[in-house]
Length: 321
Ligand code: ACO
Image 1 (cartoon, rainbow, N blue to C red):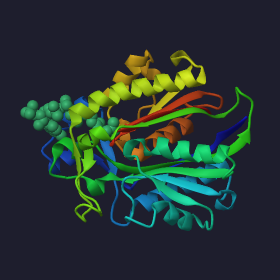
Image 2: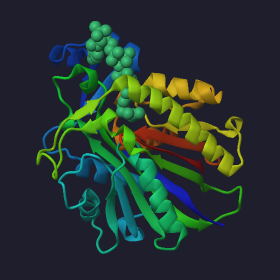
Image 3: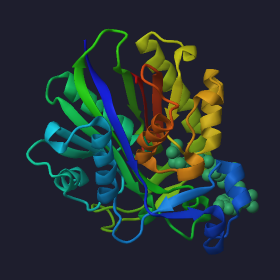
Image 4: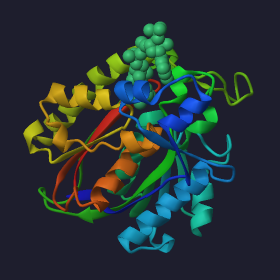
């Protein structure tokens, strides 16, 4: 069967790392509050000149290097972001140009924190249908640019960064490598729980992030545990078969509560929210890259990716590394 097989991963972070203590000098908060409620200890914040496009391109180049490929081997780029460099052109086209590519399709996908799952599932479908052979799938964000730095209930939670996968269509055996099953969902009824209060067609301004944190928390745990069950059922696997879960890194307590609901030990959950905070669409490929490069995720492991974000949107994808 034709599956999209992961050939390489990469990630990129801004140079500046901001600890909770440093943040507490600018915002009415404390290291203790942030750690206890979220597990976050630090985040990376983009400086002038560092953008979603520059971080996305650096992550994509690292993924190409990891796969032992060049841009000439690629015929599709799908980039997930809610913080594009400009309203248009799509940031994916600018990443293509930065990498030295031309001609093949490159486009952005917007599903906020679940954007990478949406982008990966779209690229996977295009690869399996024969529309492309090798894709770079990127999650890249600079949420620091849409935060209200006077709102302590949101600004302490997010960071900037990018992660990327290189995937290739391969004819594999049923127990072989590649993306096995994916499910995506959306429910616009809850749009006002997590949104940006501006945009080109409404205010003409970029706007700032607004969130009802408690409600988001409740929905996140319920939606994530249900989509994980759906994907496992579709793939004919049990929670116990999973070697690693690479979740969207929103909050340690969401990761913990979701794992508990599925009866999965936290030792199987990749946690990077402490180091990166919530990097939205970048968080899943960033966390995957960290866990693969430090030796946790090995070839042949069964890995579940999952995310939930504004919209609401949510999804999960099961792959064999
Ligand atoms: N520092 C200090 N105190 C704070 C801060 C802060 N940064 N933020 C809020 N507080 C105070 C509040 O003012 C409130 O004070 P009060 O009791 O005197 O009124 C108190 O802390 C409790 O506030 P709550 O909002 O009720 O705190 P809660 O325990 O719900 O935690 C949090 C807030 C961390 C946002 C939590 O609701 C959460 O994690 N929600 C999930 C949201 C999320 O992760 N979103 C990411 C995007 S969506 C996704 O990726 C899944």
